[in-house]
Length: 187
Image (cartoon, rainbow, N blue to C red; front, side):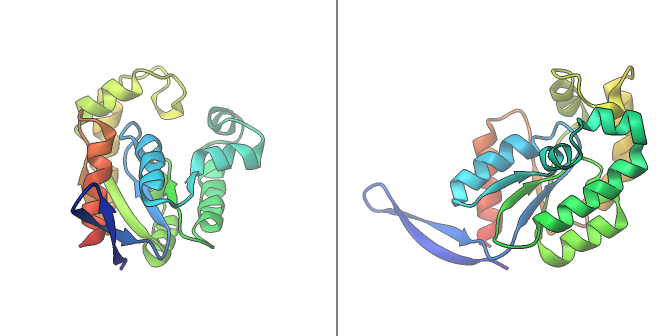
């Protein structure tokens, strides 16, 4: 587990920041904020950030929607596993994964063995509101987000619950979630 470093803030205050000695992998449902929280967490901890979905698109030369359309979900998940395996190697960093990454048994085992996993969790209504703002989610194409997210949650939440740390995300600013993660990592 991470150690601690004291850092001066302001006049006489100090905060204990965790020392990151391996990757931190954010897992959870689509729309929970893994990418936006991950970027802020990486900046807060002064480590690099990687978005697994962006890396998959770069490696494939296709968008995730195109990969799903042309080759199917199984092909996508295999590529996702390979990309995440590459990302967890090397220097510590924050990695945001796609919602289904941690569901794959091999990917989950790899993350649990080589990284600190953090399940970002939110109510279905919060998730549906967030994913409704964008139209790039292949699993939601022409479907009711609340219905899909509820069904996915029944399958995925027990698997997400095996993550090292569980953090609730809500409608508060993402920096509050980041600070909650930092506190959990420092324990």
